[in-house]
Length: 288
Image (cartoon, rainbow, N blue to C red; front, side, top):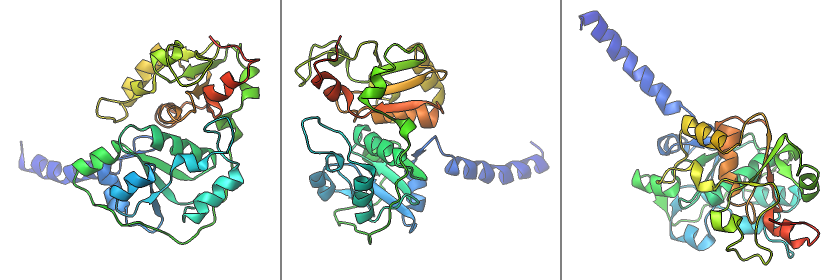
């Protein structure tokens, strides 16, 4: 290599590394990227883990939001509260819709995915999940603590997007719509009606099976865009159709929502918030 080419290469390498360090994979954020911004006053790191787990260890500066505190009381498990109620909860924790919000869980991606969708549905400007979750953060030897973090109350202005949520009424009118694909993200035995805590086991008529774990590697990291595109399209989940996701309470649907909406940039993705609990509870609804 000539001296000039060597000099150019040395100058070019830091530029490439800079691009790599700031690269955002959809609405995910890497351990190194979060470590760089975690002390920014506009950043809110949200632990989606149980309160007792949060008390044992959590990311420095993280506040705790337990998903079950966001649900309505009643017989149907997991239905989110009204946008106004959710806004009041988040605001009381110091979260504004204008913050950069980073959500994480213990490593299974279910709880962080659920909170991501709720924040996204409410119109947050910049919400992300930590790719690899707490497991990868600790493996990277980044700062953790037991100290409870709190922020002054903030104003959270909710602007819910009706195109990101599916009601039972909407689902019923689109069961036979050729332009809609309904996706059950539970495991195969739940889909087949062989297990589950719900009395009327099975799945929503016309729903295809695509377990949420398929979008993740064995280490709990979201797969590459190329891998995701291949597996979802082979399952019949294509970008030309509207996609409606659900599980028992739609907690597991959130990480698939991220894969489709944020990484693959599908324009029409909804989560059926009532999920299979609500559907099966109505005896007028058939199940397969």
